[in-house]
Length: 101
Image (cartoon, rainbow, N blue to C red; front, side, top):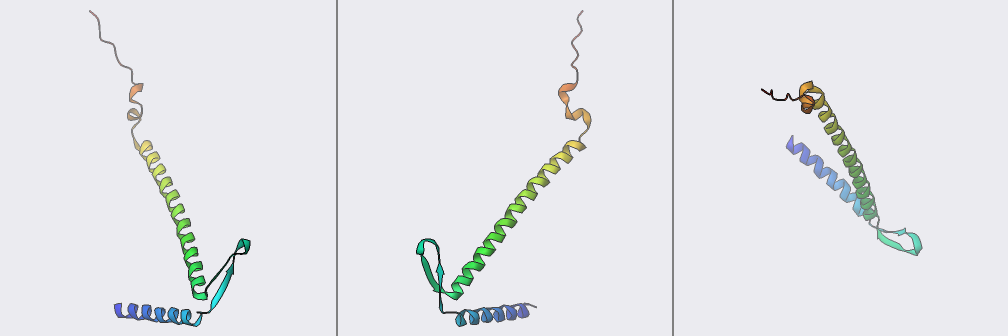
């Protein structure tokens, strides 16, 4: 199984390497205010892929944090509901005054 995984990785590497070699011509990126970059096409594709992956990870991380806060809030609510009633408000019990003689 390991040999098959390494074979697939090697095949994927050579496919991507061949793609990079075939797309090595320069491409221009035009920005605002007349600025431009001149990069090989494969770098432009790599930058776009990395930016998309970073955006996806950021969105997933934000959603994960929101879910963890919600789980924490619900656990605290469950703990409060599971406690017996007399433990909830211990100050509510009336203290008896000592008897005088």
